[in-house]
Length: 92
Image 1 (cartoon, one colour):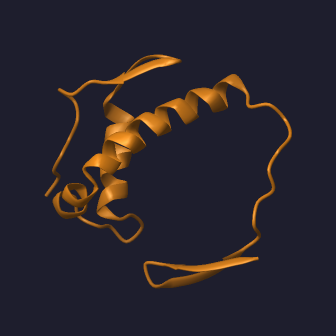
Image 2 (image 1 turned 90 degrees about the horizontal axis):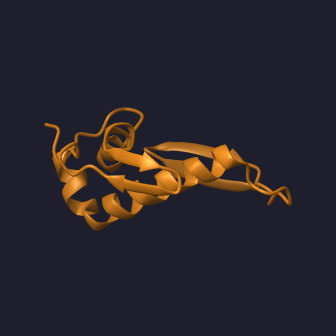
């Protein structure tokens, strides 16, 4: 069991097990997109925390991640890139 607190909410969950099955193409596709946006957001984390408002469910950084994940990725797996003209740095 693993316990934690997120936004003032205590929770408990089972620690997941590693799967021995190979990832599907859809999973690899999603992982590549997630990694690309995560690395970009991480470089601007402090800015994103201030420039995006927290919601009851998401931190400002998560709001920034979600918007840019949904709108700024271009290309086809495995050659994804970010369309910098579509990236949103602030939403206040």
